[in-house]
Length: 323
Image (cartoon, rainbow, N blue to C red):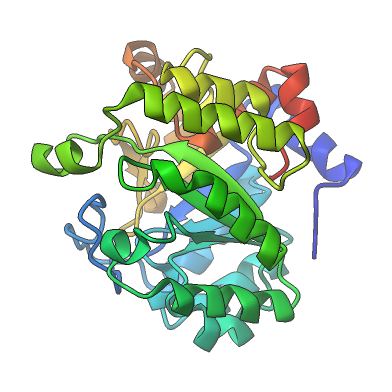
């Protein structure tokens, strides 16, 4: 298992602060998925995926650009038969590797993840899990247990919705039972999903929701394995993105077909990986500034927490516990 050492932190700061380039490559490695979650728009819009050699070239370019972390996600990375090769190539280049999965295929493919440093599994509820995801939670828990046995460091990530808002404390207890950590973020009501879905899943009972978040704050303070900082938890309690976003400064977002986008919230295309990462980064400077200036903000925990770290907020530096 590889974690951030002072040397790696120094490299990240050099890349971000001095060279002013992103340190993380977030790769939507496939648009295919083995689930049909109605709150997700990725599987509904399949695209032609980059080939294995194309991804290898992107990773090599990313290393030259100064990228230190490769994160594979969306829609379901374990659907790619060449995932083991891709992770191995990233690791061989010296990149820290990360993966986000729904966990359905985890037990059957965990033996192919030897080159993975960080593993995130989406678990959005207990009693409501099958309704949200369409599969049995025990299948996913079996995958998490198999990955734990294989020595992986695991994060359960939960998207808070109307369906699961009363199960958050139970999810923390499940994480403690499994010996893993857990993160929370409120559901993002994107325009690509039908309004009736958000009427069903969106956070509408604010008092009930605030009570649940207040309890997460208490659990965090008592030592529960919640990775979110207290600053972030209090921010999502108000549902107000009160921070300066540096998402596009920290994370380079690449879609399955090789399009470079500003971020997962602002999906404006900046270029393509075939144009070269450095060329695209330089050519898109004004466009990125314009997009960031007009963005109303989001509460994706990776964007918020890392932006707060970028601004060196002391409490976040002390209490945010993931990459």
